Length: 111
Image: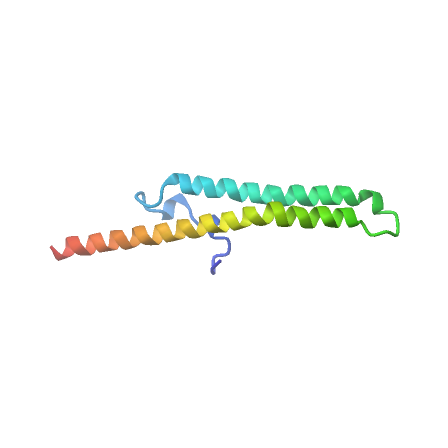
């Protein structure tokens, strides 16, 4: 991550050149961002629901802790890693396309 925070949220259609990375990349990134956030919310809600019977008692809700940790490790973490890899691939593709456009512009200017 850089100074802009979540790299997937700062790109808009107005600052993206028309011949840049395909629109499908941005759609896939946006969809995965939503799935990632939903997975975290669902895991947290299930863990909270599992702890409800223990709210009035003196025992610690171990089941809730196990559900939360397992959900975050086996569901949210893989989604987060995949999301980050998509963002990095998208940034590399944008940088490569920018370099190509710059080289093309320089070659046309030199001729």
